[in-house]
Image (cartoon, rainbow, N blue to C red):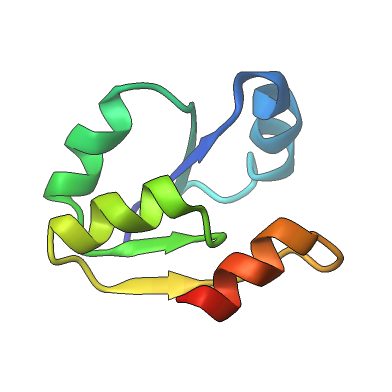
Length: 81
């Protein structure tokens, strides 16, 4: 399966390098195109960000959440969902 990894612009270089040996992973800067790609996707794998999760729920997509260790806001959001 093809994986689209949307990241913040400032982290684009880091994640592009990190995943360059995985040809099925395409790293992209977060943009308004995210919603379009999400609508055509099979599901969402993401950290528990309210905006992203809400969009996936509205589209009826399956969601798998993971939480970065030590990130308090994300840990709260994960418990919330």
